[in-house]
Length: 331
Image (cartoon, rainbow, N blue to C red; front, side):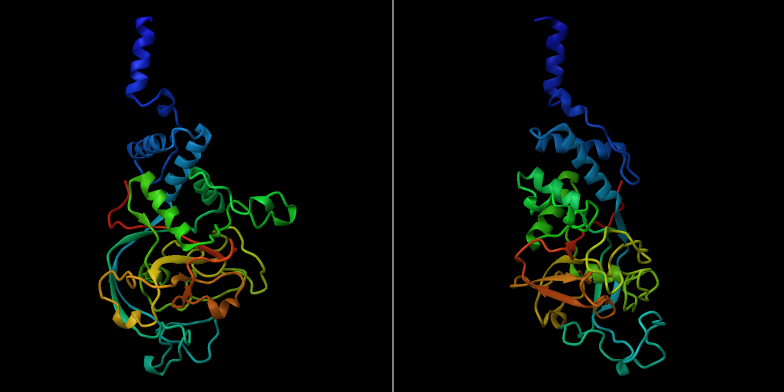
């Protein structure tokens, strides 16, 4: 065998395969080139049998997902239903407590087991500015050797909007949302996971302010910062202005799964520092609201959705976003 060919083969073997170094590295707003390269190498190692096109899609998805993470500086806030005027205009909320004594206000969400106000102190973390995209969730399933959900309906013209690539990804189970975030973490070598319920509310309320609605201005303006009440389907992510921290769709369109188990009395027992919910339970928690609700009633920052962790199908309006459980800035 010619010496040059032998040398090339040896180099390829040392490098883990010639094609392994050929992935196109996407640009990043937050990650160094070395970090992006390390993600590419991790994808090559874990998925050598996938096509180069799929591996490059995975690389682009991981890098974009980390770029989309918003740094949330930690702090302390009063978590739970802090009250509202008994009669109010959602389009003109004003500043809490609206010139009243807080104890005279009415509940924001009656009978939602969120009325026990309690102090919570959170470390800094990151939260995705967007909910997970439909096509990113498809890519995850493909990488795991799983079929696309509802594959038999994908070619129907009347369902084009339902399967739009930038729609919030619907999930059938809480575990699928959890697994997707952990997958991002494995490929990026970062502690990516679902956010805790306290982290979601702290971020939705712009670091714990007394904001009833998690919009750009704390009010609800149909068609301008939230879906019209007569909207009958989800829309692609990021259609409306983000909240002051840069988080999109915390109000309306689709709900977010969080990590916590649900218990009616947990707020009364919650620890002060970085609460993560009960150790076990039968229901998980979703936060936010979805397109099918009367938004001014359902789109509050404090409402909790206890729900079965396994549903009957992939329903639009039931989605998630990932968090980065790190108090350091990305690099």
